[in-house]
Length: 437
Image 1: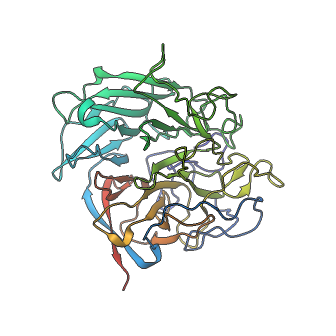
Image 2 (image 1 turned 45 degrees about the horizontal axis):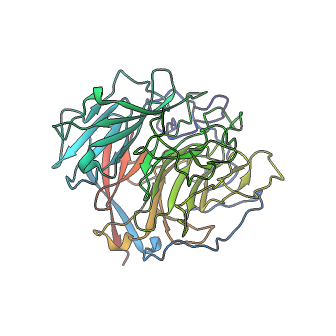
């Protein structure tokens, strides 16, 4: 939980009912300023003066979340603290499940293989918001066999390693480790953890603000630190003396700011993704005490999505002023597409888990819908990928639905089908959809 914070601040949150045993954090306080309506829209006053509509809308899509019913099909259970499911997109149809303590499990042919794909248990720091948090396969994985992971090292810092798969396609030898980057962490929370290759072939790394309640060091806005940023690096053509290169098209190359920074103003981007069709960047950024947000950056004609964007933290939490508490200026910031509050008539919300725009073929009614959820309540929402800002999301799964989910991640397989990870239940489910009658 955040040092000095009034509540746990990422997906590792102890629920009041029931109390989960995986973290010794206090229960969420009962004081909540505003209810969250069923559609996930923000209500109430005290908002900053932000842009309310976006002149540039995402690519036209067919999806209408109000016209579908979401379902879940169990893929596999028996995982320990799973925090991610993903695919290599190599035609093998395997799913890879990341366990926080340091193991990556392989689901192949409906079976979880006994030997982990990668086993870092005992070699990393795990617990709370630390551990093995991210996994990405190189776009040319089928030929170069490169795998990238984001984890907390033994010193408590963020580490990005590359590994190479050997003769056995289901096992990585730890001795192939190649350190890409180490980022010092001032606190044990807000590590971010997600990393992914963008449509441009570069590696993107989402970093939290380094922890501490309210970003005490203003790191998310400081262009001289990697914390609170989206980073973008070229791992295929490293600069002399380094294991990566900052692409020349990064916004701060040749200007004040670190060359690898792509965008800023993030608190703790817990799961983000690129729309595999439109190229837009979608970010679930965890809030402080009141609001959770989904940010969407659109691909531009001459630049990938998100270049030099400022998502507002800690000036803003959602669309509301945070520092200062009133009278803040949102000039130069990108307003979130969707905001939702913590209070609710049933299960309390606490921590957004970003998802994906559905681009699969099995469920046409879901096509073009961005799906995301909340870790504590288990709610799942959908929003039209081409919606104007601000958008109204549709509640697709209630917190009273069974099983009750602790949503630590969504995932996408090679065909674009979607999955959701239930950390509390140690299970991976496939997302299904049918049209409402």
